[in-house]
Image 1 (tube, rainbow, N blue to C red):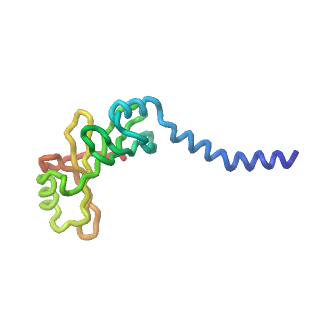
Image 2: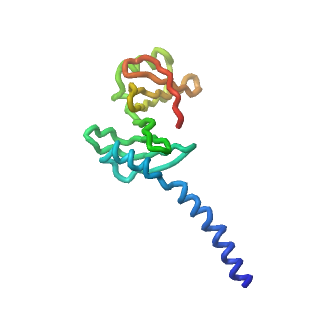
Image 3: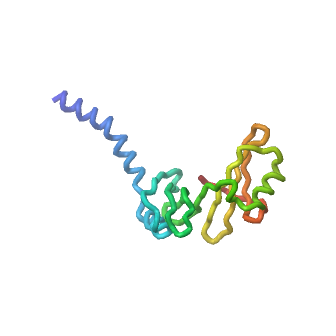
Length: 151
């Protein structure tokens, strides 16, 4: 009897966290449905959840073919935004020029386009200036914008 109880306790100790972890990655149907509606050509998204927000990492195979991207949704399935890494050569010249004027001598720059429903797209610009990390948001015309990125 004691051996049976011992094995049950060992099983629960090992399997319990795995079962709980699986439950955390169960994407709510409202989120999954919104994603499928927004990105019907996406295959095998990798889902994660932080602070009640769901993120799908995937490759866009639509007519826009935006490549690798991450779409963010709230619990009710509302599409918060999508982040699309851009090669510097594909970034509008006004964005690159604004970055160079604002932070001369910056290096290790990276550009991510942020698309939001009903709002103008932005570029998130990450760079290093004199050894310090900096982040700025710029619209397609090179105007600096405020943006509260919740991810």
